[in-house]
Length: 175
Image 1: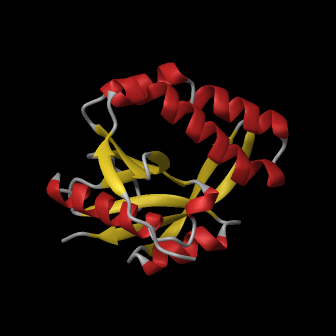
Image 2: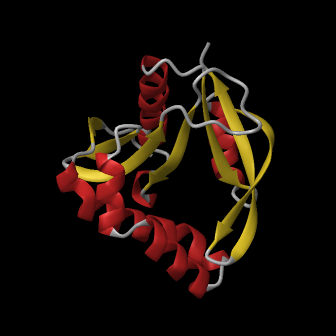
């Protein structure tokens, strides 16, 4: 596929509804085929409602990085500064809470550019590491994160709706 030019900006309060709709659609697109619809519905309702996005946008510890192609939201990352985890020993670790790329932009350089922005943002905040989790049943995501310099350090549990799932915990050292 042909690479595209991606522009970036930080999310602002007025982006809450757009982020909410985008996140719900992209998350459901990826996870609904392998999960019970009730679990997806519960997760979406408790994670992506516009009011929840607005609260995250207002939180000074959180940063939304929005990636646009031709004026259209193509992807976003949500970072949380100073987010400790028992398996992450770095100073002031930064978590990638969400990293969503819409399917039409896969393989076109959007994810790479967005992750580079995330790494730069975390580094600028003074983080010693950037960490995230990836569903154990998503080898494509795990391979992408490995390509971007993340190391697998163990597992974590993610509860999707009412269903516990196993995620891989991945860390990118910044020091």
